[in-house]
Length: 69
Image (tube, rainbow, N blue to C red; front, side):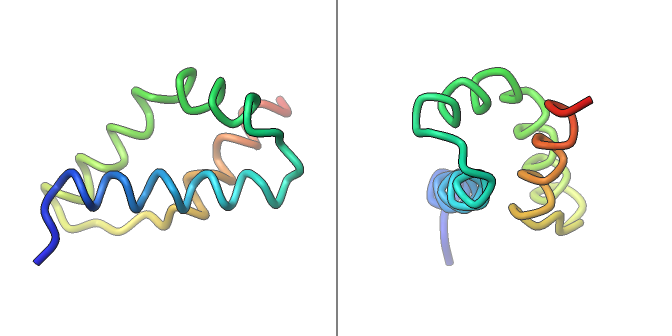
C-alpha cells in the first residue's frame, strides 16, 4: 500500500504531465502549482478522507480553466 507522501507525489506528477499537454513551460507549471496549492491539497484531502476520486487530469483541467477566465 502506498503511503500518503507517495500518493501526493504521484498526483503532482500526473497534474504536471497534464499541464504540459496545454503547452505550459516547467516554470509556468511550478507557478501554477504554487498558486493552486491550497486547491490541490483540498482535492487530495477529499480523496484521502472520503475516497472521492478526482482525477489528476480533472484537477489540471480545472487549473487551466481558472487561468483562462
